[in-house]
Length: 463
Image (tube, rainbow, N blue to C red; front, top):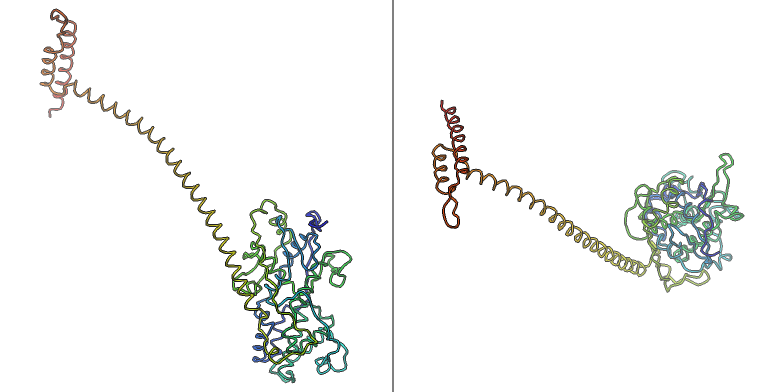
């Protein structure tokens, strides 16, 4: 059913992922060419591939994504459900990643009638050759030695380009035949410069990705390591581009534990190097099967690129000198690049505005929260301060009252007693004055006790 997974989580199994292409293709080719030839090769249509530090990819990461494939009726793409969101690997994505032009159709007509000059001149007597024959030819003729290649500079570049296409873009094993059609295309400078290499590489890779985990399909690529009894499959094409696409749409895998990422622009593959090999179980446990983090992981939709108006050059059409001289070092149209930059800028602005809005909302909420907390704190502290002030106020009043009513000197006692006799022992009553003998007696007793006590204190303080 469309939209359903091919493999449930319970059916996921660890596989070894192989690629039989030449990881050391740069060293192989560079030793074959002179410095000037090497420089010229880096300026041709495949120049960006010779600027890559490495084409080593993360097989376990790719395997987890391939296990996440969902059923789709689109033959020209692959759709995956990762972290509960759909992502799609397309021809446009491959174009942005590699910089190779990729049209909707691949035209290979008219090649059967062309002569295979490279085969006739450098491999005489053979109807076809294996990639191992081409590798042996190149690696046994290092430049600057007595066995250096004796042909022309152009033929040296053509043989080097042929080896790159077969061992890297096609990702062939060395025991596979070299394509006669590709040999003829590479031998024609104008046709090689305008050929639809992006579609050839994309369709080769896509076919391999679609079939590598399906039963009864891709028997050539699928293999079993009998001595280890470990499930495995071998990819053809250029799987490094697929791994770059995964890291582009799932930026969490751009972190240092997965790859060395450095933003350099386009083509996107130049941003990635030194891809690591995380363990399958760790990837499943921490990411692909951990539903708690699904909503926390960012998924970036890959920016589509509109098809260019220009069409691939048909091999049957004559090529003018002007057309043949317009070879590009990247096959990457400047207008497309500007459009990509524009869309990226718009996307960045939208994301930035959304982030600013989100941060401002958080600031408002935080300010309100702090304001309420300050009010509560003031209220709590105010009530406690009032209680403390009341306590201190009462204590001060008590001390003041005591000091004002208790004399501390002998003469003060006499004055106090006389003042008490004048004002305190008489009560004004209606109709007359009455003497309160009980008060007079009590005050006289108090006066005598207080005077005796203070006189004793003053006597003791005299040295």
